[in-house]
Length: 244
Image 1 (cartoon, one colour):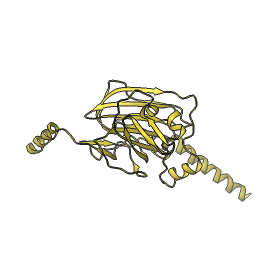
Image 2 (cartoon, rainbow, N blue to C red; image 1 turned 180 degrees about the vertical axis):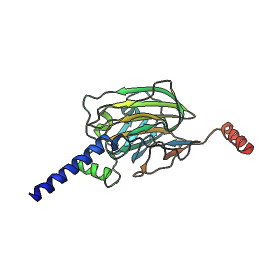
Image 3 (tube, rainbow, N blue to C red; image 1 turned 90 degrees about the horizontal axis):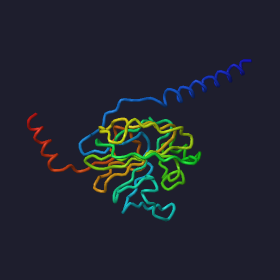
Image 4 (cartoon, one colour; image 1 turned 180 degrees about the horizontal axis):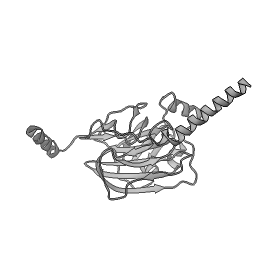
């Protein structure tokens, strides 16, 4: 009898924890302050950096497939990325799942691409490594990366960036809080994407990447990359500093 009570207690505790994680913890909305704003590109999401790839003439070399992958295969939209970098961030179920504006600017365009069927992003071992061991796994070029549902957001500011939100197999939908033409501030909430998911960020070639593969980053807070500001912007900042 005592053994049955113990088993029932354990099951009840596990059930309560699961409900809490799914209904409360997963939807937490922490207040974040960017580590820097001037000349900074901040993380659009919580998660682990799973790859940093060079983009050359709108193509990315995929060693896994032994071929180049056009940027359009990932963004599912006509782009003019040219040369730059692609930073991939995997969001585990333990990460905050709000997505944020990496820079201040205007939402130039958005495109949602539905999939016939969302594929699982990771197998069991990859899931354990990414979620619990926090070990890097390069997922670039996997089938889900090119086929799953996604939402692509182009932001035009002092620089231009493209942000691609990619859904996992169990994601119900990607909820977006902004519309085309809207002005956004760096760190502003743009959307919410459920369960384990991924965000790809395309940045210009003259940006300096400040993170490395396997690093844990935090949306609206961690600086992913920096870029040089124009002379006029620097002069204006110097004037303000001298007045203060």
